[in-house]
Length: 454
Ligand code: MG
Image (cartoon, rainbow, N blue to C red; front, side, top):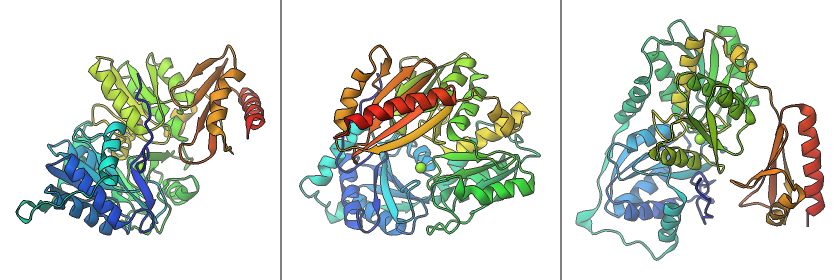
């Protein structure tokens, strides 16, 4: 039932991305603004992350919208999930200037629908037709749109998250937050303080040059976070990517929690409150499904991309399926009681709730999860589509899943093989119950794939 992927010209799974000024020019962003204005007439909410190119590109986008007669509410700098939350309040749509976790020279545009979800494939193809079609006319002088700055609307997002938790939840707890100089500087510390936590920050001042670490929260980049967690005796540390739709954690010992395990820890917590369905892409670690099953819940798989997870969650719920949670194995978690998109601020608050409620340390919660062993690799292959089509023939009798690429199940392991849509690359993930099983499946797969390379 999961949505099928549609190839697009400009937009990827997470909007348009490129090096600002080179691939992503103000002229292109102005055209995107005009196209969106024509497709979603009304009032559009616009926001951006902290990137240095954001001011120029944000103005270009807003100019395009205004030129087609749309009104614009400029939300200023804020996390992507904050804009998604606000858009649901009667806007015709939203647009976020962000390149998420990409390096500082990148930027991008993500389009948000009135229900707060990212624009789906079919609508994005329509938008691209407008962008690449005949010039979009500029409206007459007496019908130009009006722009209103609304930075104060951000408080509604913070209040929205707080409404899910009792006020003094984090009393006595110290948490270290690393917003990575991104927009979560003005949200996550405030959210956790309002929950009663003592909050310390690393990279806590907004800065589009990202002086402390790159927008991708990698283990190497989080050393300062880990050090401060240890020296302050904090319960845990949390870090966000460049637009704070994702959150990753270090435990009280400063050890990074692998993102699939983070997902599983939250799964366990939610499944102990209610039983139902967890929605996640086929690429997510088996630890998620095993944890859900251990707690009496089940998992539904989607193609890779948070938009497919969010859309599937909503569709299943409309059919009466009790969807209780969703997310990806990269720290992007979706809480359907809150909103249908990944939300790093909500994930931060949820972790306070988990630690406060369980009486356990984060390292203990991680240690009690089912043990899985993951191998990831990629191969350059010009004939990647051909290889993927032929691969199932090499595994007769095995259970196969074709939701996205080819997923091959053996007794206590699986391998997911996917071809990149934009580069001649094949990506492999092997997830196994033991290191030996993982190595055996990986070696078998590797020899078959290299044997088919053109
Ligand atoms: Mg992001």
